[in-house]
Amino acid sequence: MSKLAAVIAASIVNYSNAAVKPSLEQFEKEINDALGVTSVKVWREDKNIPLPVYGKEGDACCDVYAKEIEYDEKRDRYIVHTGLHFALPDEYEMELRPRSSLTKTEVYMPNSPGTLDWGYRGELLVIFKTRTSKAILGCINNMGKAFNYIAKRSTKEGAAIMQARRCYDDCADANVIPYSVGDRICQLVIRRRELIQWDEVETIEELGTTERGAGGFGHTGGMKTEEQPKEGPAIEGDESPKVSGTNRFAK
Image (cartoon, rainbow, N blue to C red; front, side):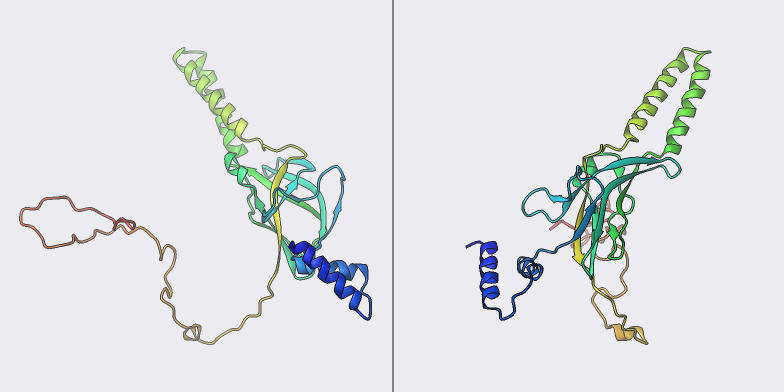
């Protein structure tokens, strides 16, 4: 018997034996709790845009679809509207993550992972930026104009202006978001949030000691750059060069 069938069967038995019959909502919640399913209220501005959906069985995140894409010229960024509004269950938060296919483009999510808090009821918006900024494109374009001025006086500089134009065109092509309305743009997952209660101590010793202690960045796996002593006894006349650094994977 599958887990779903077992849960439903057990719920029906419990419902039948209950002295006070639970409501349909309570019955549904009991089944969802047993299956590890969390119910989230959602409102769509456009019914033609799909709700977030798991791509395949076993996926951790749901794919989110674009309803509208606008370019914010002032901040040189793209704002993707999803048309989705959520009411998360109490003590839950939503996390937005990039799709793996984003690594094949020149576009990134600047606030990744993003967070949607329990109290937010506005539209879910996703921000994207391109790695080639509009300012750099402007510089390349101005260089092209300068080369063009020079090229009028010399055939040699004509090749330079052509190269500058190709560079500009390549950068301009990369500076366009690779998504259209209806495309999957990112992933979302919800998780229970933990409430923090700080237990402040008076001295650092009260935190206890560990093997790492106060070791900072790269403490557990940084590459060493100092010269390492040779192993074994020194051999007279040995002029072999000393090697700086060490191979952490050498046996």
